[in-house]
Image (cartoon, rainbow, N blue to C red; front, side, top):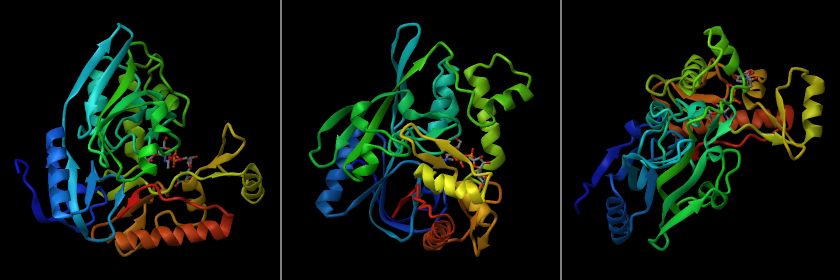
Length: 339
Ligand code: EPU
């Protein structure tokens, strides 16, 4: 083995909730060859494999009796540039925000609204990360993945990935595809998305009338820092629940009792509700039980004040799900993957 495999390793530094469970085996892959070698080794030992990126969408509820394979491959490059449209490719282990900042430094627009999202490039397509009116599907052109069933490389186009709100082919087939590198079509012209939430307002407060993509990125970073906890300071995995999409009649029913309901009509006639708003209305914002809690500034974010276990956080999430179902008839779906 050219790659080092360690045994009985704490996963605390490798998940943004900061949950202190142990991996029976742990290794980092820097190249495609490392990935293949580690998968072959685990198969020979009959170890299951759990692939992780930044561990920012993961709730670990038990010790992991498997090989935890952390994608640590780095590298970014421009594949083509016609003066307007530029195709860039990044390796799976690249930290997402650093990659976004690199694209902005090259004068490329497209990813600025996705600034400061924790995690890695390879994990981003898994749940089609999104923020402030943009999802990666809007600038995604393709990715290369390893088929863990056959050991073959496969290229995926945008259509192949079946992206939807916080969802993809990869999320629906856990363990099948290991994403190695991802490609995006970015632009030297600025087609900026400023209409979501407080983005335009924040720019005008700063006196910026003709923003660059970097200005938008900076504004979004400041908005996020105000209400989303930094995992380096307070363990969390971003939004813990998806915003639920419900029939229009149910949204209307809730609005009659609660006229302030935050709701976004969808193309198919259904309505997406702001789960954070429902959870706050139900009185959970700022709730704390031991070290497991609901963030005091954003009710959609569960937090670990220090020593919470994954089970404690999961139990809190379940209590919130039951309460929201009983109060509003709305089912909340967890966003992070549970292990
Ligand atoms: N709201 C409340 N109380 C709360 C939280 C939110 O009333 O405690 C209300 C807000 O006032 C606003 C609405 O709910 O009217 C939406 O809130 P916000 O703009 O904070 O966004 P969100 O719907 O809670 C989603 C994404 C975030 C993303 C933001 C901005 C999901 C599950 N979450 O959150 O993504 O950053 O929009 O685009 O779709 C993530 O997925 O981890 C994540 C952070």
